[in-house]
Image (cartoon, rainbow, N blue to C red; front, side, top):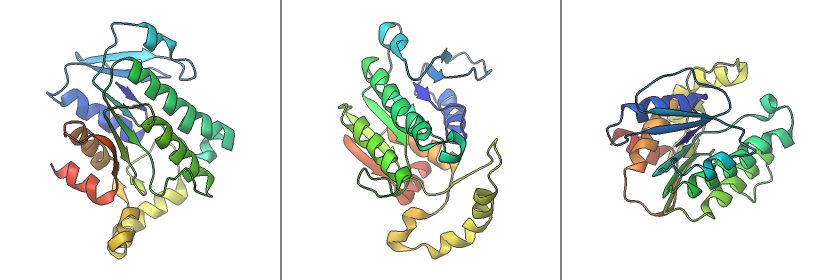
Length: 217
């Protein structure tokens, strides 16, 4: 089961999951139709504030749940609107996945996320991580990328400038600072698919180096 498939990482993730022989069916939970057809694809257009349909439908049984939901404060329009997407919707989806039988949950978060952070963005991301982990999945994989590199539908001039500079900046981010390196969106997607196939248990945090290693595997 996948949430966030209309976004950059989520769209690439969906492509990989549909191509993977490890999955017989891919259920996408989305607020608007993707406009895609595929023999393995089941699309559910829902409101993330009310995912009761997933709880009530015994035909929806899943093994792995992938969450690439996320927005920016600028796009959301306010801190409360940002929290609704990056905390409420994420946790609602995780609860629905748990109720549908998922044993592994894979979440795209952000580098520096912490429920104790003084930075609002990082704090909400950290609170979402903690809430998802508290649901008791066998394995909770949390991916904490720095700048996510790749073409986006919406125009983000500052982010585009950072992406242009990132190949050079990455060479300067060494040792502990390497977690802040920019990373291609498709590398994150590949790492998520690989992590789902691993035998890891509990809460597993993936930063730049481990995502690169997973993607290569």
